[in-house]
Length: 263
Image (cartoon, rainbow, N blue to C red; front, side, top):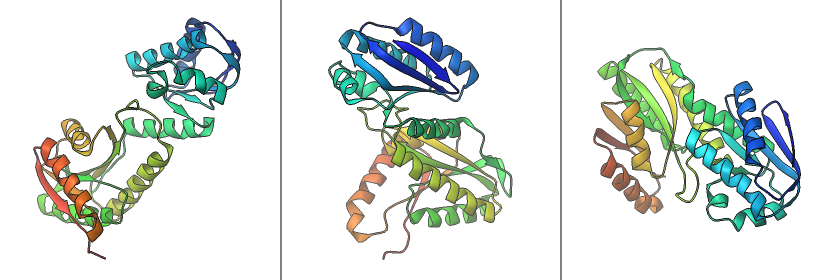
């Protein structure tokens, strides 16, 4: 196996027929020091790999888990994927995306989760209302209601987008389409809150279900009230009920469900 690196990408090439974890770990550690936002492992040039070589990626998976590291595997050839699928847990627990570009975009969003996205305005950050976004038209009504309530209570707003990750995937697994939707919703909500001059912070919260994601966010960012949008279409009454049940089972704060006008 040949290991090369440039910027935040580690390129593996050649044949992998034994566990080369020690060599790869050194490369990952050095790259993370230079690029703490994360590392992409490009495996598109691996010519051959057997199950012994796949142990290298089991070690990568364990390293990610033990160190909460941001490492994503990208551009996996079909013959390599076939071997990974034959190794229990590796394919389902190893963060994998189709391209290096998708991996970088996902790392950027992971960075968003830890960066400060606080904007000063009217209201006190010591008293906060939590707004839960879902990327639909209902977000507008939720934000407007939150702004009015924040003004009345002289509170700030914490806006979160819960990114729900299936249980058969790592919690930090890249989800390119869902991550694009999350970033779009967060940016739109931030624009609305800026226009209302409300003190606010924006967060992305990963979780296995909606109620757990909101409860986890409240532990770190307590709020007196939680505002949640529900589907406004009559055809989605059943989904609205699932949202309500998931939240009320896990969230102890006062909860307000908001539905936009029925079309």
